[in-house]
Length: 251
Image (cartoon, rainbow, N blue to C red):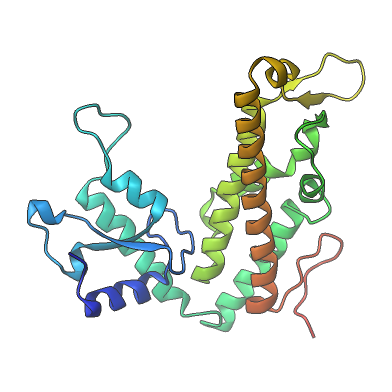
C-alpha cells in the first residue's frame, strides 16, 4: 500500500525529489520506501517514509538474509540519512537562501571548474573512442575531482546543486574505475597507452561488446552530469564554468 497523499507530498518536498541516500535528483523516478516494511507492521507515517532512487530502493529492499553480503541498512541508519538530507534541503532554502550562502556556492563552483575544467579530461572524454588505444593519463582530472568531493568543504549550500555535484563525483569514479578494470597498458616505448584486450574481440566477443556498451553508458552518465552542473551553475549562481579565468557573476 502506498503512503497517503499528505505524507507523500511532505516527504517529496522535504527531500527536493532527491534520493536521501545517494542525493541524486530523481524527478519522477523516485520511490517512497517504508523504513519498517508493511509486512512487519510498519505504519504509513512520515517518520516511516524515506524517499530513494530506484537503485538505492533495490539496495534497501532486496537484502538476502539467507546469503548476507555487505552490510544491511538498519532502520536507525535510514532515518539518520533521511533526516540529514531533509535538514540540508531545508537549510538551502532554494537557490538564493542568503547572500552568504550564494557567495560560498560561487566560490565552490569556481574551485570545481579549476579541478575539473572543460578543456581538461572532460574534453578528452567527449572524443574518446574506447575501442582504440588511448592515453590513460589524460583522465587525471577525474580522481582529483572525486577525492576533493569527499571532503565536507566540497558541499554546496544549495541542495539541487549539491545533488548534481554528488552525481558527477560518482560518475567520475565509476567511469575511471571501469576503464582501469577493463583496459590494460600497451607494451610500447612511447606514451603510456591503454586498450581493451584485443583477444576479447575474437575469443570473447560477447564480453567485449558488453564492456564496450557499459563504458559508453558510463561515459554518457559522466558527460550528462558534468553538463548539468555547468548549466545549473549558470542558472542558479549566475556564474560561468570557465577554466581560463576567475569565475565572476554574469552581467
